[in-house]
Image 1 (cartoon, rainbow over the protein chains, first blue to last red):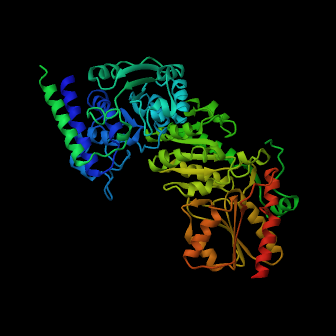
Image 2 (image 1 turned 180 degrees about the vertical axis):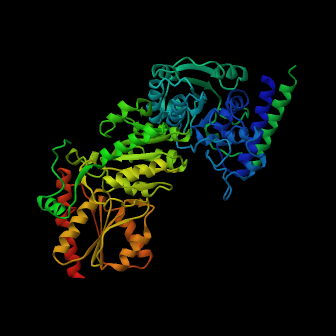
Length: 277
Length: 334
């Protein structure tokens, strides 16, 4: 699949995400749209995992520490065939396994996450187990930038470098907004790159919506004996004009009229992309 | 606390233990460490995870013998439990070893979500539990751990009474496919079980028969209940003693049998009186409509008295003397 084709897929997945959240009447819209391209690249180009290999001990592991953006993960996993797309209609319903944060009840999901600050320590345990056994798998984890105020991340950041886990990649969905407002106003975490570097990580910064750039960074060989942090600069609400960079869309649910407008914008964006020779 | 810490057994209690033919064993914590090492030698997937706690967990020999099977995470209990969950999710059989006061409070959310909710086969080992740390003060006491953990779904909670129960509990935990919490103290313990005894997680062990009063005790208070029962026997009172090593799932059948057969019930635990063994037994009895004179012996809801573990036990009546006197007073009134 070319970058352009993958980008078009990303637009279609955004439509599905918005429809799913609208149908469920609840969901985390803004952050889902900010991390969707990252997930699309991971599952199409980076992770050595598929519905056929999901039980293999040698599979790559993906963890989503910012569990509230689970709808983005659901649409990407459905697209990759981990479960039928029709399952998405049950999101949030009585007895549905599709709840508002990731759980292992869903094919393709490794751990139950969603309480912030939990993912990175778990990913270290997974990376350590792989390193101890020489299994060769890699571990990728997605963190929110607001989430980094949780101190457990920094315990883990220290430990990953201490244990020289070069099979671990932490991707920060750096959309710079959290539920209350701009992250720099709620709890400033800048300068992110210097912090991670000081903790002993190899750090890359990338446009989190640029398919070629994301692919290049995420497929780059690891720096020996160093965990890797990828700071992905993203736009919360990416792809829908009235949702972009608006904190109220953190868990805003589109009305029928808003959904209609959003889908129209995304369809127009897809049409424009298709005109590119 | 040094090895010369005051004994939790009074001279009279020691004399009674001698009369019963009980042998003083090692600290349960030492037995835990030795058993874990033995299991780890036979299974490379068994891993100890420590938060600067290999010394207090008696794991220095383990770390020398099996350096590739121990993971150090630093003084960071949240990280300890998260890493342990990740190891368990990827084929390891990890034992996270940390003082119970920190493990079960600082990392409670990791225990709830990363271990129990994610349902990974991790073992959490709360060491120096209860008031083992004595005069170090309340920061280092874990009188909340059983209550906090009982309220979390999908966790087996075991507090072994002696060396035998400790060894068996570690073996059970190593074979378990779901989360387990083990609780150990660090004072040397008398051996309570005859050779050839059987240990099943979730099944209380009757150590002594009797129908006037029953002591249902857990962990390292069981010995005090047993000595109290022996003292009561000398006064013509027949007391039953149960070692209820598994707090959850509770052996409801055994508790109800005690309630139906004995005139009075006294529970004993090295834990706050709220939310632990006593209230679990009370709920089981009430729900079954079994009403008996009933007392919960533990640490009351107050700032815990200061002093050594022995001082604290004596102060709150967790002793041969305290428990036998309480039993007599209940039987006299009822």
